[in-house]
Image (tube, rainbow, N blue to C red):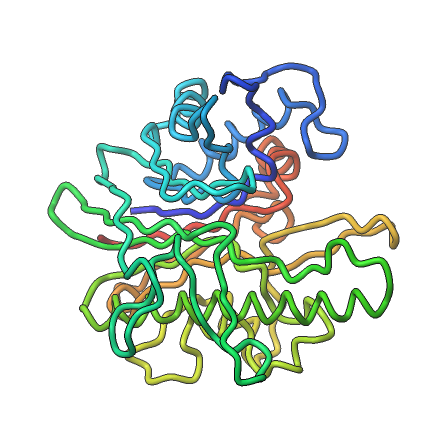
Length: 343
């Protein structure tokens, strides 16, 4: 099977208030890109990656006027994608949902959240992702309450042959100091946001360990808003959120694995992989970052899966196809990541 994660920048802006596709000349949320151009580019990208399931980060907004599932399925029908069924978990208030678009001929999928509604008794399951998590963020002997602005999507999946596995789609909090008006505010917000980002990753790690203890096959995927060298404060905390979720320093049997994270966070002298590309107005140049991951449990790693970042410049297969190369640049500021694995 091929499973993908793809952050589609402001997918929701490509639909009108009633959920209909906006294939017109109006501007999308992407700079100098029309809605029709972005939709066409997305159709090309989704067709090219040809995945059995795509975890969509920043999926269209779910509200009383229009529904994420209906909009994604309409998108799939318009561009004749075989991933024609959609699934959403907890909706959020950010207009950026986490959803799964999948091929029903290749797998079944249901939203299957686990955990307790409130803070658990020690030794029991961690809180449900639509609840709250209590942790001392600033070492002041007082527990702080942490919530997900975008609760992870927990999926119980099954192949026609009966193989069961679990997917967790995530969009971890950004560490960017949005709203800061001074250098002092930038520093304070950046550190505060990093604390919250790490807390969400600790919460997610607890869930990972519960699945591994139960002997379940697991893939954790999405946008972690984290990677080496993204800000100057990362050394203050010792570990990144990605390392926490992976279980970087824990026993091998409890670690998740992603080869791109291994290269980026390891000490190897290798080219840094990247999954996103942003334009910096103040510098007049692009900034690349590794933000998107597909982490797998030890049993799935043993199946020798193959990862691929569909980067228009770093992946030769993408670069050599001009239509695909341009579509990847037009469709989003992130690029898809896929994993091919025998399930």
